[in-house]
Length: 152
Image (cartoon, rainbow, N blue to C red; front, top):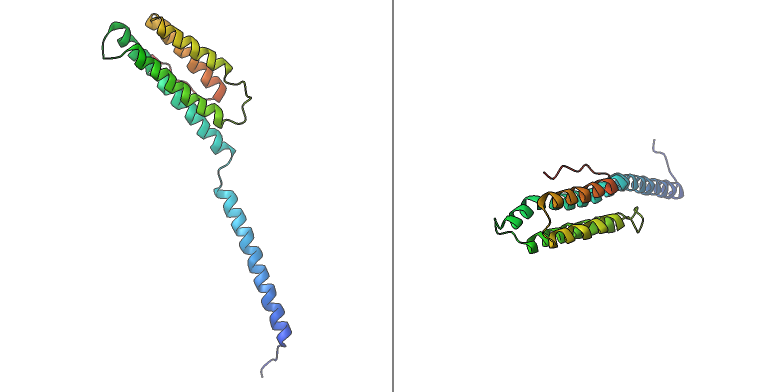
């Protein structure tokens, strides 16, 4: 025996099934998008990576500076100053990306970079330049919450 289902009931059932499918699809899509979207921790880690790049650039300078002062290895004051400016640019990128830091967060490191450039221009003793670099690296580590390795 066949059951007769009126056309209105079939249409209503079809509309309810389609609506349920749309709601399930939206919920699954929303949850999938939230799970795969970068979070705050990912953003902080990326900014810390930029700060680490700046410290790595700085930590290479003492050996190059010592060679420059000794007239060895083809290093010059210009190459050292260029490396300092490259590190400063990398750090500027980190500060620009770290929107959670206050606008004046870079003031301490800016002054330290200026002092470092001055020491290089004066051809200060390598130990003095190395100490200044360690100070800059320490400030960067403190601001960005990274671990700085000793330069020497």
